[in-house]
Length: 65
Image (cartoon, rainbow, N blue to C red):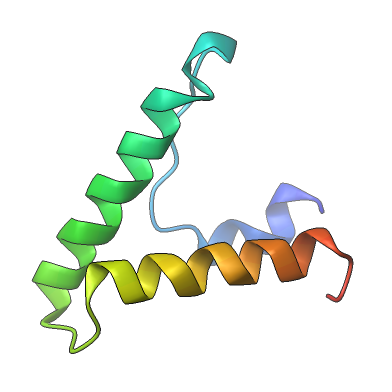
């Protein structure tokens, strides 16, 4: 997917080094989601949203969209 097609949907973008793909990226996403939930006064919990996110990523990776 070309970046210009998703740019308007990006909430935050950071550049990471290859060695940061594992633990750093996971922690960054978790912290971002927790902050977003807090700032938005969402009624869904972190674990529930995280499970939905992982399910959606799997769905995307299987080529359904």
